Length: 181
Image (cartoon, rainbow, N blue to C red):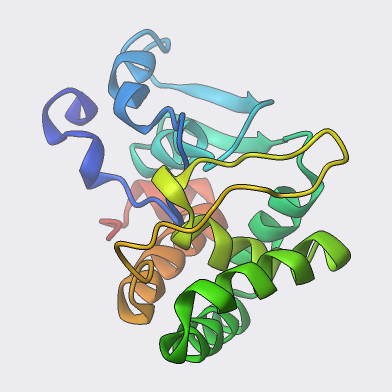
C-alpha cells in the first residue's frame, strides 16, 4: 500500500492541470480490490492522474484514458508515443517567449484556437493562470497567461513528460519489476 504513504507528488504528472485527481489518487487506489484491476477507464482524463498513478503503483494492468477535449487527447498521444518531439516543441516555444512573454502567449493562444495543435496546448497549460483550462462557448481556449512566471522550464518538463511516457508505455510485467522514476 505504498500509495498511502508516498504522497501525491511522488507520481509523475506530465503537465499541470487544475482539477487533477492527483491529490486524491491514494484515496481512490485504496478502494481498488487487492491485486488491482485488469483495466482502468478514466473518462474525464485531464492530466490522467489516476491512470498514471494506477500504473505507477501496479494497480492496473491497462488503462484507457478519454476526454471530450480532442487536443488534450492528442497531447496524451504525443506524450506516450513521441515524447522527444513534444519536449523539443515545448522547449522551442518556451525559449521563443522570453523576449515578450505576454504577447507571445496571446499569439500562441490564437494559433492554438485556429489549429488545435496539442504542442501549443502544452505550452498554454504550463503558462496559463492556475493551470485552469477555460474555453469560450465557441470552443476557443480563453484562459489568460500567468504573468508572474514563464511556465515550467524545459528541463523540468523533460523530466515530467519522459516519466509519464515511460510509465504509460511499460507493459505490466515490466512495471512490476521496475522501480519507476
